[in-house]
Image 1: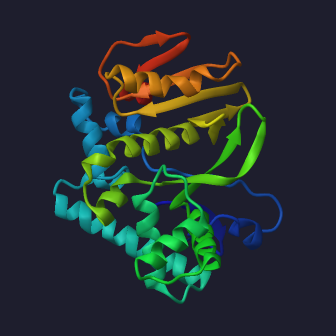
Image 2: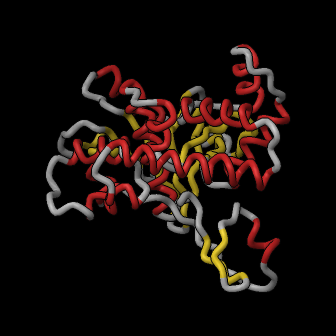
Length: 290
């Protein structure tokens, strides 16, 4: 499931949204936030560890929820994802947050699933949906986004000005818990493989215990600033950088950072690791398996 807590409440398990433990339980408790399978965990279920690109495509399309590994047929996987979407994404969120307009919520969900890795704001979303014929207020969008983040369907990454060393109030990005749900809801869109990779990298950084931010350096953007107790790392994510102009464009934001913290360029190019003025270029699937 997207967010499951085993909670001892009158002998039963309960599905809780973020923040509900403190309301439900008094005294001390441990909150364990869970994500679907990492790519490394997904690969570990196969005896044959070859054809990583093919398995990665299955990881995206067939979902990273563990139970899908037990399902052989696409229609069964789709039925399972339909159950998750209907029960968790709709019924639980609608019931817990007392949402009256389910159709409007679905419109926001579709918009967010379609715009993973894009800068978003409640006003931009409201304006876009209103122009498309779905009138919705900024306040309502804000409420829905909060509900979707509380249910761990969406993850919000704020922006940070690297040179100015300050958090920014606007320009946040959102990522989703499972790309398979995106395929289920929107269909396969090959043009979005780059943003799907960015989503996978973001979730992997969370799994590895990092606080993840979007970086701003001048007018350029660094995909991820990953922070933990050991320090800071910078990540740029691109589907391919075999074109020289694309490589230069992706390296520039990292080059513009004056500190000496580790910097990585992760791509789907199956090339040997390389170094560009101290920036490590790494095949993303190898990085995911490290």
